[in-house]
Length: 173
Image (tube, rainbow, N blue to C red; front, side, top):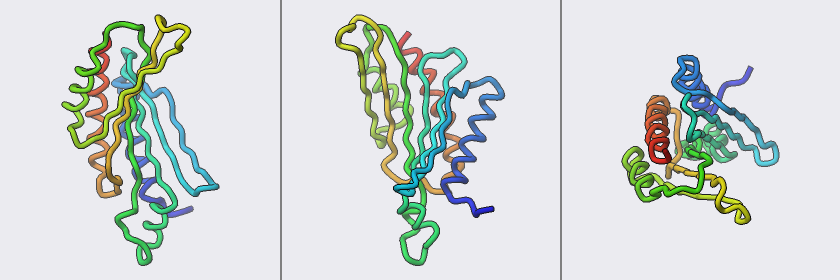
C-alpha cells in the first residue's frame, strides 16, 4: 500500500461528492478517466456529468505534474507551495445554429465564477454543413494551484457547477 498524495486525496473527495449527487439523481455521471503518463510522470483525472434533463455537460479536470509530486514528497528540497494540482472546468454541448447571445452567456458565467477566472468560449462546426449542429465549449481556468487544504472548497464547487449547468441550459433553450 502506498501513502496517497494530495492529488489522490482531492480526487477521492471530488468523486465522492459527485457520486453522491449521481446516486441521489441530481446529476448523471457520463464519463470518468484516471490517467498516469509514465513518460512525464504526471497524473490526470477528469469526470463528466450533466443534469438529468440533459443539455450542457460539465467536466472537472485535475492535473498534477512531476514538479507537484516532487514538492509534496521532498518538501525539504522544494517549495511546498508547488504541492497540489491544476484544476479546470469545462462545459460543452451541441446545439442547432440558432441565435445564442454569447455575451449574455459570458455575463452568466462571470456572475457565477467571478472575474478572477479565465473563461473561454469556443464554437466549432463543420464548414460544409454550417446550418447543422455546432459544438459549444466553455473552459474555466483557475490561475493557481489547488492544494489539499482546499478540499472543502472542492465539494462546494460542485454546487457552483450545478448552478452553472442550470443557467447555461436556460441560455440555449
